[in-house]
Length: 81
Image 1 (cartoon, rainbow, N blue to C red):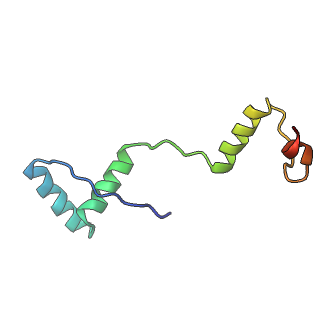
Image 2: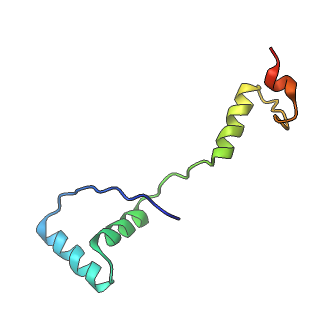
Image 3: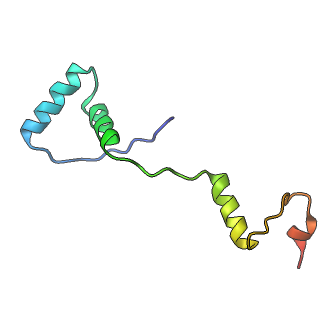
């Protein structure tokens, strides 16, 4: 999976920064990589819904649960006035 990384700053006491630098060096990682791995281990990010699932939920809401099987072949659904 490819992530877009965004630069940010955090303020750390010197002893913690020294510890991070030495731990990163021992693991052949950058301090950024080490911090990302620690944060991802400690925090559980919410799962993102797929675009398809979101669209299905929107369709259910719009059609009050009676979602058409195929929008592309049912002209009445598309052009009905």
